Length: 510
Image 1 (cartoon, rainbow, N blue to C red):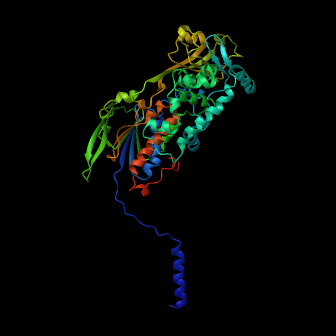
Image 2: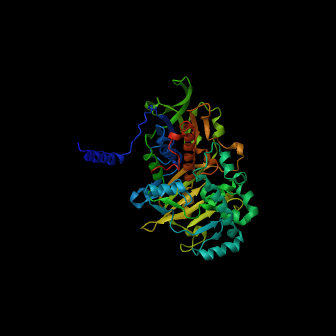
Image 3: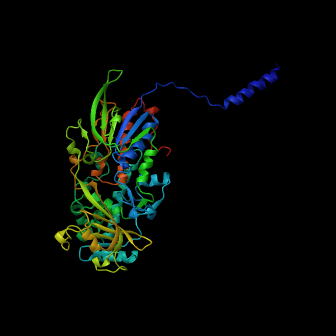
């Protein structure tokens, strides 16, 4: 062969193959998937599955099973059709709102393509003491601001500058470089919230803003969001309630859709609906290296799925509502919290404005009753309801009203409040913990069993522990994210760190 042609032949081969990257083939031992059980398909459980799938599951093979005792996903977030007629639309029955600073909920709605809507029609707030409106909005924001200053002095002007730094501190929880917390005391200290959770809202805020502003404005927010008065719940909960008043959103199809989608996008995940977990037993296995490995066996109402052993169990339901026998926890009662019962009443009908001494044209559309100490004008010093909010008006002129109360709204109460009704739907939720001030040692544990340095596998996590600090859909997803970080850090040890995909923000490519 001519030497010139030989040169061009080898040059051609170089050009072609130089563009093809050389792949290094690494032979890895096939690993048995880690098995994770998640009990509860609400905000905490569904988001935990999602975060684990996007982080741990990208580096270590995992199989997840979600046990949900109901026949639906969403936990305390669900909707009902208005007047039992889906064509009229749906209304939130449980967890109803999230706000712009709720990054996970807002980001999920955008990434998953779920349209947002305002929770209610344009509202005018009225604070009702059983006899008169102590404060009410006119709809003119400038005039309303002047009315607030006239009644509360400089408190409405000082309050935003007091609240914003607290919100900013809390938002640091989203920072990717923030390490996960294994106790609630740890995160409360990190966020500098100790003083706010150790005192009632009344004790902490009255000296700053005056009793009128606290007992009327701040307490209206706390009653509307948590059904609890300022002399009962801790100051941080009251401040969170006040921040929820601006830019409240929900999903058009119902907030539960986010939690359905979290599960739908979780890989290698089995969902078992209508399956109640009855008990969790700890068992020990000996591996090939003669190490003692902690695992867990779950017994359910569906006996054919009771043979699986799990490395991790995540309890994503309030302990007392889950009603599970966990024999490996010596004193499960100490992890339980007392929950506040909220009665929700949905009504379609024609409200009677004369109950409030008003006409249809001047009655507020969102009414919140006063609590302690402004209760003298209520029978037995107890308001018959907490909130009365008109959400929409149907084509036939009927209003769709949602009421919250601490006891069931009777037919007699409805007769007083409405000229007539065509539809009434009642439901009682154990909605959230009673957010009274808590000493640091009284917080429920996040890690209920195992998962320490001497145990490289097993553990039980309590995803609802964070509710005792503050209870929202957003903070439930934050706890799910935190638990995923704890598991990631424990399983991606120093020897595996280089092969583990970085945790990042937990969203992965979704």
